[in-house]
Length: 341
Ligand code: KG4
Ligand code: ZN
Image (cartoon, rainbow, N blue to C red; front, top):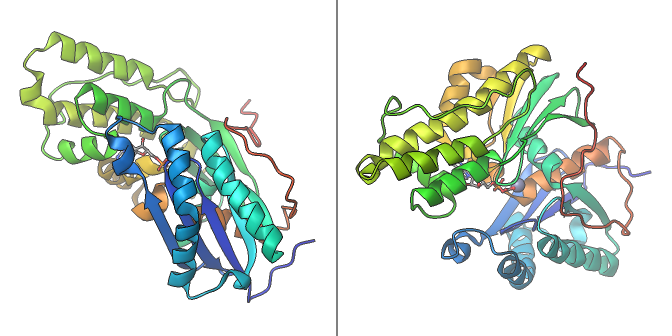
């Protein structure tokens, strides 16, 4: 059985996509360091993440990032009681760098190694800076996932719904590509939209009947048709970006609100890279007031602190075994889904 005492320090290691990130937290969940090497500038020229290039850079950077995280926290590796590492979902060759490195350090230094689900990590990012009341709903919107979770406590995050096609971040990235903007598209569309007119055009919002599921592929196609039909679209690029963003934000909030009502949600949590979006933050606050909680941007995009935080929750709940035989997995696993009938 795993016991935690006041002197324990936990390291979180995240390498599932294009960020090499390592964080150290204490047993009260206080973040002592969160060092991230972002590969965005490397992948920009390809218009998206190239898995092989990403894994090569994780291999180059993982030890320096671990070192800089320890230095920032003024700790040594021997001070760590647990090493928590993302083991999926994500790019398999990227996950393998993080997991193999962590297992090796664990073996060498005799430190417990714990596997952490990346999506549970995103949910846990909401607990870093906020006190959460239960039950709560959490929307995780990232480049690969758009999931709604019901949280009745810190133990299990019940998956309520997901996207039927593209993820919200993917809709931002693909939309940006259609508009000739740089990767990551969400950041560019957010920036351009600030000068745009929300009423310029109405893009379709998928409502998908009574379910809590999301869909974004129709929206992306309608942007493509709009551009093809309007030769002078470039002169209205800010308005188009703004209306496209408005449709994504509205789709996210329609389903999130519906779930918040159904499950009497005390807080409405937002996590994942798309939670950095300034319009989503503004509209969620208009809709839910102070019940809406967002992590700060550094904890929305992929980071080691959220992995350490999920590790801490599991250690406290004695819900995890230190066992170095765990695998890596690329696809999203439904840990627990709710029967909504
Ligand atoms: O959570 P994350 O860092 O990585 C994944 O797990 O996928 O999310 C990355 C996604 C990208 O699709 C990116 O375009 C989007 O988050 N993103 C944003 C913003 N910043 C990042 N989307 C909308 N507005 C933003 N400000
Ligand atoms: Zn992520």
